[in-house]
Amino acid sequence: MTEAHWLTASEIGSAYAARRLSPVELVQALLKRISALDPQLNAFIRVDSEAALNAARDAEKEIVAGRARGPLHGVPVGIKDIIDIAGLPTTCHSKILLDNVAAEDAAVISRLRAAGAILLGKLSLHEFATGGPSFDLPFPPARNPWNVAHHPGGSSSGSGAALAAGLVPLALGTDTGGSIRNPAAACGIVGLKPTYGLVSRRGVFPLAFTLDHIGPMTRCVGDAALLLDAIAGHDARDPGSAAVSCSRFGADLERGARGLRIGFVRHFHETDTSADPEVAAALGGVSRVFTQEGAEVRTITLPPLRELAAVQRLIMQAESWAIHASWLRERPGDYAQATRHKLMIGAFHSAADYVHAQQHRLQMIAAVDDAFRDVDVLLTANAMDPACRIDDEDALARTYPRQARSPFNLTGHPAIGLMCGLSNTGLPLSAQLVGRTHDEVTLLRAAAAYERASEWHTRRPPL
Amino acid sequence: MDAQPEGVAMSVTAKESALEALALAHKAGLGKAVQEFPGDVIAAAQAAAHTRSALPTASHPAAEPWPPMRMRTTS
Image (cartoon, rainbow over all chains, first blue to last red):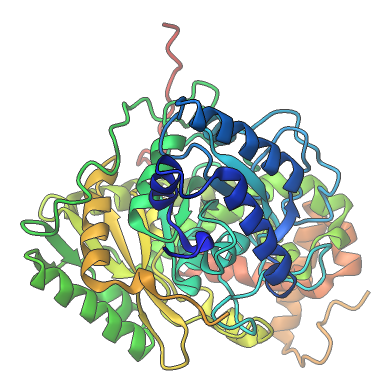
């Protein structure tokens, strides 16, 4: 049997049902692994051992008594520390909110509790889901399990690192400009940004209201579907929540790629930006796998990446400035340098700049929707480079904007990052698939078909 | 207060831009940041200008922005 810490959520459910593993045994194994590995990785800000063990005992009793609640019952989940868990601090990895104890659970946490999931602790991030890997904060930055000298991506850094290191089977991340898919790329895991509004933002500290998404981070596509099943759904207390009915998101995971029409957005990484040759080659490999699996791959053109990214950036800068203006005026020294710089940018935009960006946004949403008249799923680059060293500020500044993720925060379409290769330095490479609005079922079908054919998801870092 | 980031030689135009950025920051209530972190303030202003320069050509000024205003339903 696979070691307990590498089991997927669905394998954990099967092991519980067959009495080969219990929730208490699994939580104990993960706590032991966290103790051993996290001092190098800094994935956790807080491990909630006692509450996790209590929840595991409760889950065990219910499962043994034949009252299993569903596929996530007794499955541990790590939570990015920007999401409220009642009674615990939500620090946002910042000195500003060190004592910010949450009064109630975020909507996604309530849903996870209802599904019987076990909350293992709070995971590190880039300060306020922006900034960068900073060394001038109360908590150290997370490290990449594939090479601890390298950046694990961000802002959901701890979520990516914890999954890749086998510290948790599931995690939640948030994504305003790519913060789920970036660590997915750097850490070689699966990161799903759902359609805007599909998952409630209530109880999650905002970075930019109209761009913020909460989503699953996992080690396989099937688990992303299971986690999304648990956390998606309308929430009347989130004004941006979509009033849509949720199907079983993994309904088509086994259908394969035959008949799917894949639109390959080559210009993002070939001409708009020049991707690292290994990344470009890996994306070509993804395209070939889809063709071999019976999909039709055709080249698709979207608006230029530079323009999509600039519109997203202006909106994010304006909205995040509005949220942080008061603290930046009174406590600028309490932010990390990288965060302070990024959050002050919005002070220099005008109201008209923001409105103009929102006007462009409408046109860009329409352009992406138009592309979906001819294809079912888009294939694009995720990160344009393998993860750089975490202490190389120039490389971070150079590689961080070299990505194709933020366009889909702007347009709200669902997008998934998944591993598609290893660099010659042993670091993960990643592709991004994008779906029609509220068509996560097809998006996950395509991702699962690629995953089955490629098996990159079975690779593990040399810890 | 030294408005010039340490170790960076600035042209007259760059110096004017930096002073303009610091003045704008003051107006935005960022006086403390201007005093303590002038280099960050100037870098933020430069980043804002960079973002605006990458925007597409102007859209029609009367175009509807996203998201459109929506009324709550009472049902």
